[in-house]
Amino acid sequence: MDIKITRATTLKEKPDQNKLGFGTYFTDHMFVMDYEEGKGWHNAQIVPYGPICMDPASMVLHYAQETFEGLKAYRNKDNILIFRPDMNAKRMIRSNQRLCMAEIPEAMFVEAVEAIVKYEQDWIPEKEGTSLYIRPFCFASEAGVGVHPARAYKFIIILSPVGAYYPEGVNPVKIYVEDEYVRAVAGGTGFAKCGGNYAASIAAQVKAEKLGYTQVLWLDGVHRKYVEEVGTMNVMFLIDDEIVTAPLEGSVLPGVTRDSCIQILKDWGYRVKEINLAIEDLMEYAQNGRLKEAFGTGTAAVISPIGELNYKGNAQIINDFKTGGLTQRLYDELTGIQWGLKADPYHWVKILK
Ligand SMILES: Cc1ncc(COP(=O)(O)O)c(C=O)c1O
Image (cartoon, rainbow, N blue to C red):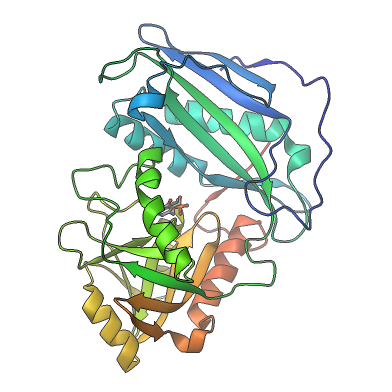
């Protein structure tokens, strides 16, 4: 790919690495590329980060043809590492296919991610637990009113230095089991990472926060019975000595962290069951002590222990609201691999050359 570079005339002051938060600061430059039917992807550029000019009739603003990704780059004392970018590229292809959007070939996606991260490498924080969050996104830029697939798209990558998700270490969160709103159904867009899914989820998130909960646990959209995933994480349960998580049947996002955890857990000798687990059964296991640990998995928090589940007013505390041994071990293993501090037998981390 030929990438034209326009350097920003003034560079921003880097934020305090102790106060990065999540998704607040953005780097000096971004990657942009255009698509037109008949011409394909073209005009790859690195340009100063800033507002983008859009026609008010841009189809994304009306019919929400938009997909995105989220991954991270890490810095250790020797290298810059990117975790499994090929998985995000593949997922974006599946998302774009579902929304009838132009696909970004895997090699092009990975090359673009690597190019912008390399160009902005001074922005990758080095303080322990910090990283550079990478947000690629794609949207219909053609101007026109009328529901049909757009013939023009933009692909952009922006970067945000982010802090340790848990500055005081890994802490359990309270989760509200949502039994009124639903997120996705098989045949819908649940498996795709598209903005529309998140827009539809906000009402439940607001409701959960009002009740003092961090995120919602979604149930399946047909029966409101089977456990699917948490707001921005897949979810796993240690029941007796087995791991249970929802299967990928179209309504759940196929998380890169989920996939990585399943491989590690299997290698540690755990039986991992990808099955439809009824919420009543889960609450019973929580009550009778068979549910030993519960945790969410996702790029932002990596592993997030669940300390409480509330379903229809029945609040069950899990593992005395403490981070479980397996949850902590998994967090240490995965973050160790991501920062290049532990062996990577899976060849997941890509060292930036
Ligand atoms: C709905 C949803 N489920 C699961 C995940 C976890 O996916 P990943 O591990 O690829 O970050 C995310 C985050 O991207 C998400 O938004």
